[in-house]
Image (cartoon, rainbow, N blue to C red; front, side, top):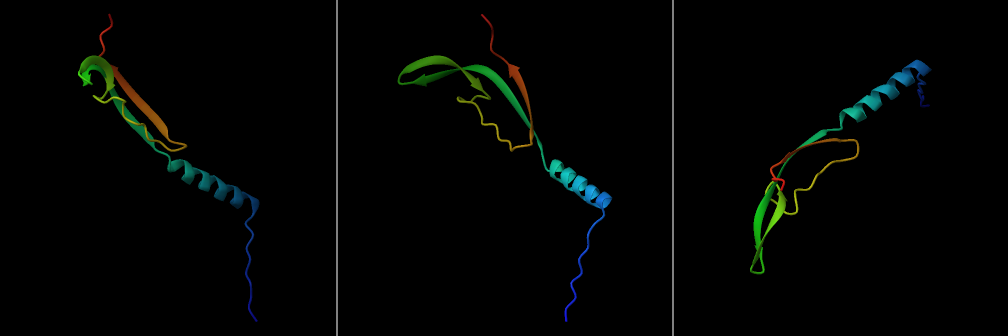
Length: 83
């Protein structure tokens, strides 16, 4: 004959466990930091040179990678002269 042991947590313990689980899930989120330097660059395509706006020297600029729940902090430095 086997004996089955079942335990039922009292309401305050269940609330505590639920709160701890929520905090663990929130602790897994990250803050993603990105630095963007916006500047003009000359690009030659099909024997024609033109000036374009680049981000960190790239066109198109870099991709932002984040997951749901993450915070994203973007620092943008504009090196483009206004005319």
